[in-house]
Image (cartoon, rainbow, N blue to C red; front, side, top):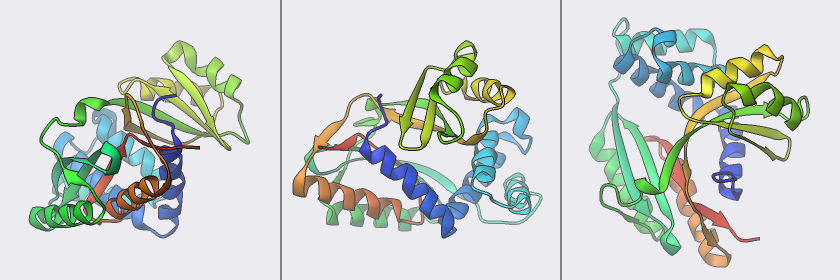
Length: 241
């Protein structure tokens, strides 16, 4: 289905590897703080904060870390103030890239992103040059070695589940961005254990690359994801078989 190409599979696996070395914790702390600052510290009344906290718990972040991040966002504790920025860009072969940034230094973030794009054969685009190619979607990740696709479908369809995709040993339940918690609650009520959930951006179509151009694009996307200020990265790149 749309969004579940080889690159999105690699990103999902890479996210697990990042968690092992702690990098994803830093990104989650930023997201929790910003979500709490913008919408308040009550996760039940702040959907963005609830997603961030659930993701953090899914990555086994200690509750103390989560609570401190919330308090920094609400101003109960002192901390760094992060600004949100969004860049639209092109990669090799006309691949569309959306780069979401949370940073305490806008000039540094801009310079690092431009450097990575230039070095990797990409370029910055103007506002709305590629954003229209993506739509928001909820993804719920489930252990496919414990549960089956049919179990997930049966539990989630009446709650608004849109589709189910299996990638190796992971089941991905797709929902509308506003339905993710209705579906999540229905799945959990049916005894289905949720690994993690997220609201992501899914491309309406993909650009298929192969050979050196595909390798170059992979390197560019990886270099962007490795930047400390980059919070999330979305692309319509896919690799040919």
